[in-house]
Length: 218
Image (cartoon, rainbow, N blue to C red):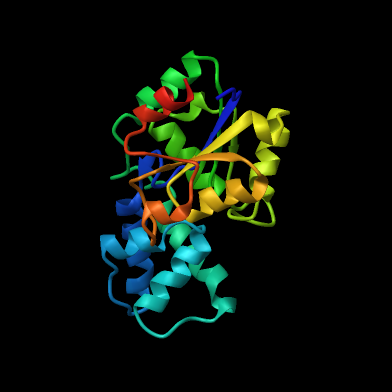
């Protein structure tokens, strides 16, 4: 595989962030008289950005809220989440070694996540990952999120690369479909957060451990 860059998703791909997302969600839910969501529920709700996470959490714990209410509820959620992104969040086993190995081999690394930019930057700093990435794009920076290809094309523009010169790594259909919609090669990790079996996503490659990416790309 003659790639020049690897574009990574964040939550569920490089880091296990569900515990802290759950904590922040439950603080918002409690303020509105809702029950707490479980860790398993949280993992199912992650992937489409903070507003969708909040919307799904409220839908699962009572009457659905109107779309007009989502921005204010999302602001509440981010108020609880920001500054506490890494209280319990950890990098997956082998994540740091994978990023270092790829960087040492001369690959350019980028991050393309539906997570808002602020918490993303905080997490990369707190988990000592920031220096690996040449480009970091958050889900609140452009009009459309993955699986729309807009974010991926934007990252490629920032890297001055063509779609054939990079490969996407992610855990969910948002990542794999986003790559497909952009015409980009892709790798799915078998762990992470998704509602469907990894085999049903139709990824070009599937790995069970991040270290396999280094071996696969070469």
